[in-house]
Image (tube, rainbow, N blue to C red; front, top):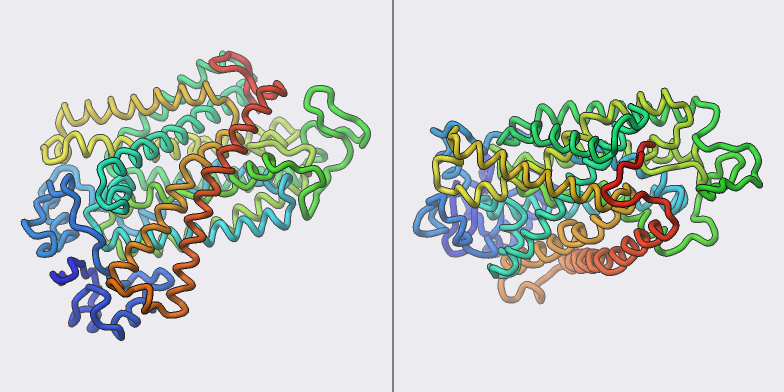
Length: 531
């Protein structure tokens, strides 16, 4: 693997004659640049890495890459340094990474799609599903390209600092959002695990007790220290989640009526305000749909797709990061099919009146509801576990970098790892009790954090990388394709800003409206939150 000093760039070329004879830095040979850009445009795994946007950050130099950032093969050095360690991190193959991605994306949030489609209308809902999937696929490939150029980065916090010119404040701000985002997701899974235990046991215990039990179980399953070890659990989680949502769709179709059904179209439930009659399915939003309701429904869809926050952490543990697009394309295709089909089928049988989030609550037959919900148990546990592991790894690596506690089985290392995980689960428990509602919590997380980690960061990353590739005259020398891609990434940045502004407003207002309407329970309550 060659490294071009003039451009401080990395060449991760496979055994390809073109790449083995030329330096890796883009911008020196226009014909070579065009060739490489074409080969990598759609996420092909033989893409050569381009130029770095900055030297290795000071806090990442503990790897001992060498005195000159441009004189070392960083990826090779990482693997070489780990060779004799008891705990090795660069061990994930692309199938193992795919298992982690499937466990992250094929998750409980799928069951919010029928609700989103009921608010947005079936046609706009499916269109938005495909558009968001395409945007996330594209920005995920930008993440991958950035990680190829800078293989020393360990998580999105390192990328945040590097994107904003190495400023320490950027690292701290990204770190705060990173940990909060992951803890919110853990809290969501504590909340829904308590919902499940209430549902299956007919509220045999105080809800707080169930939340504590859920947090303890998740903490235990969080203890493995490498993603390679977690990938097997991830495979099982994704499989059982698929069975769960498939059963929910089948049961919605074969049962006589959804939960809460009343044959009289003039009937209005005095508690929920739901109108009776046959399920109403609409192709477009119904008249009177508010901006807050529509935005929350859209954010529910976006949240399910947006997961770029974990991708740098996954790529950082791959043996061959070039293979990442294989895993990414596989999961994206499955996402579009599963999300749209399950969402549309369940919505078709529950309509605008009878759907719930998550949609298991729409099933009128108690046996059907409990059976389909029970298959979701692995993902209720594992997805929170995955985000807890990402957070703990972020803290643990920074505390024990350069020590034997990071790479060996020591009492101090394992005790610290367990304690960090425990702290994240305590935070998750508190969030689950303070914000005890599923749909609004999804929307709030999406607007606050996905605005940056799903859009803004990667639009900026694209511009920074193209600027380095093209030199000082990069804007004047752009082709039509180049200007089109620049425009796309500027739009992506503005989408993120829209999420942050309008999305946060809609999420907070929806929470306020829910409390005012008395449709959610209080904080730290024993009340039943089962479906």
